[in-house]
Image (tube, rainbow, N blue to C red; front, side):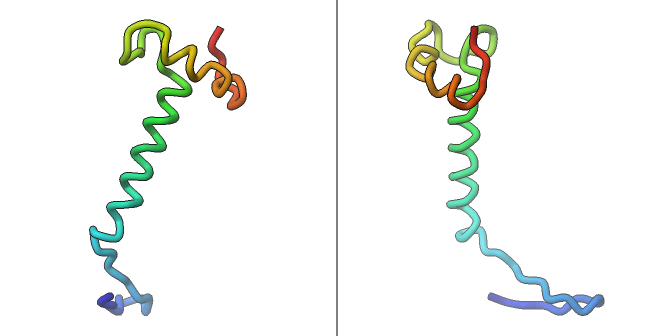
Length: 68
């Protein structure tokens, strides 16, 4: 990795996009999972019906999300 020295004497390292992409994908999947567990019902529902709500119902209570 290339290093550069800044005026304050600290070393700055460039992070290649190739190394950052897996972490960005993991973060996106984590946010998507959190949405489905915490908010997938009612007015914010992306999927019609109660199938997702019932499938994730116990996980909601375990994580402290109100759903009734």
